[in-house]
Length: 205
Image 1 (cartoon, one colour):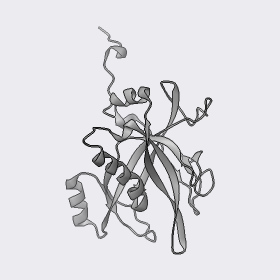
Image 2 (cartoon, rainbow, N blue to C red; image 1 turned 60 degrees about the vertical axis):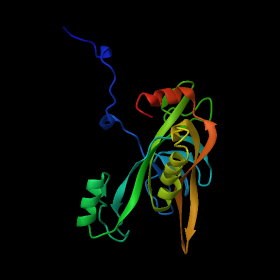
Image 3 (tube, rainbow, N blue to C red; image 1 turned 135 degrees about the horizontal axis):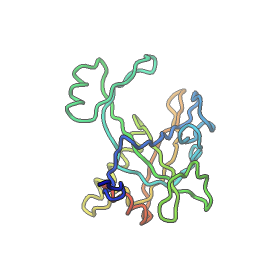
Image 4 (cartoon, rainbow, N blue to C red; image 1 turned 45 degrees about the horizontal axis):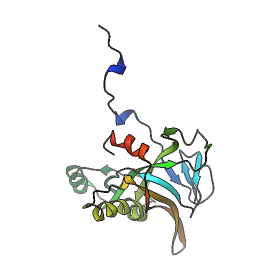
């Protein structure tokens, strides 16, 4: 007997899902649309400009450690996530380890007729763009730690970060003669759209 695939329950396979990066255009960035400070999805679509916040819903970060290799050295950083992997990497690496995190963000379209090449995913009566940010150093503090701090202070109430709308902003920073943009996240009091929450609950969100 041949069974239709529709009879089987859906099982999410993360290995088959492609979520593009949201990169910040810096002074020396190449092969990317936009101008300095822009947050660019998949290196092609400008989501917002430097210093301009837009709403998003963050999913749970993936956090680990990576080698803190100076920019002058053309080596690929090795990364570790589990405690066992981190211990092994620390033992064999000649470099100190630093925190890093990856956060998937869902950006709701702000117009009634958004560019569907950017806001590809319908949910309820909204469309969303989905992208990942990579965070280390200041971006780790201003984005990943913001989510983890929210989780800590809302533990008793059980309010998860995905239940609230957050503001994502490319934030300008300066140190000495250098300046750059960081990923930042800030929670609001606005509740996430119910249809999106229902969708995320299917996958433990």
